[in-house]
Image (cartoon, rainbow, N blue to C red; front, top):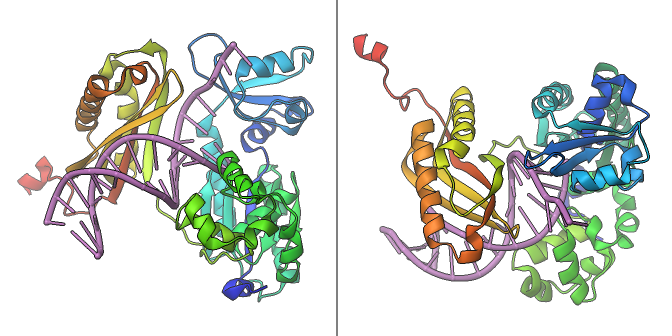
Amino acid sequence: LALAQGDSRIIICVDLDYFYAQCEEVRKPEISGKPVVVCVFSGRTEDSGAVSTSNYLARKLGVKSGIPIVSAKRILKDIPEAVFLPMDRDYYDTVSERIMGILRSHSERFEQVSIDEAYLDISENSGGSYERAQEIAREVKSEILQTEKLTCSVGVAPNKVLSKMAADSKKPDGLTVLEPRDVYNFLQLLPVEKLPGIGPKIKKSLESLGIRTIGDLGNADEGRLALELGKNLGPYLVMLARGIDNEPVREREREQYSRIITLKQNAKSFDFSDALGPIVLDLSKQLISEKIMCRSIGIIAITYALRTRTRSKTLETPTNSDKLILTVASDLFRSYFETAEELDKDVRRVGIRLSELEKVTEEKTSPSLTDFLA
DNA sequence: AATACCGGCGAGT
DNA sequence: TCATACTCGCCGGTATT
């Protein structure tokens, strides 16, 4: 089994356990030991909405991410101590930022992939030793536990995908080291959906080709797979299945900002500025505070049938103006409702997406009055 | 032919 | 039955040059 240059790196994946719910346990110690369910209430009716995250006690009883809040309440109706809390993103963001600061201090090469997950390339600080790498992982875990009282699951492996799979293999509060010599046995018998990036749809596609385990996938004919999954995705997954992943750990710029809301009731059209005004203002404020402009403005409509529909427009000149964003978004929605097929006009949720981002530079900042007077 | 843009879809937290 | 709020990435079609 060839592992290419992948052998020579040592990567750590840190994954904070049931993050939102664990943040709530830290903030309100009296709820730990009880099932905790973090909810996104959509405001349509009392308890409309979905479960964002739950702690392990709730999960064990079947309350998992994505299920309707009413289903969760049904499941836990005989457990009076169960706790349902509204999601508080701002709070989790601040906790996340502090933890990412800790992680960043452990390696020059750092990559945050989500609010609760990051990679560290510790090839250098470990001196190539998995023994030392494991110590570093232990230090990271204990530092997060001491400063924030949060547990995490950590994977140590020769590349990002394997470190993620190692972290996934023991949760919560795990520490799994996967050395190059163990990779083949680790992967061989796992079902394909354990590979990050393979969800229900791709699993089904692979099944139609008789591919069930990661071992099967690694031995698959790349040509046949390219036909089934696309010319890039197919071969890429085969390489992953062979334990090869040369993606570097690198800090990435954010590529988009979006906001989406659930309408009070489904609509064939709606008062654009009423519904969109607040989220546009919020987005615009965020762009300005982060000194960013966007060159593409998009709208998102989620239909009654839960289909996602999008329209977007690329501007000549980048903007961060709430007025312009609202105008463009309203136009896009108007034309959407004019042109969409009948079923797609029944809209449940609407949102806005800003992309093609650029940093604001001095020269591009629009001249202000004081500049004129100077 | 290469690149930009667009819209759909899939996956993940 | 009921079905959030985000982010990222790939795919294929079409328009533009």
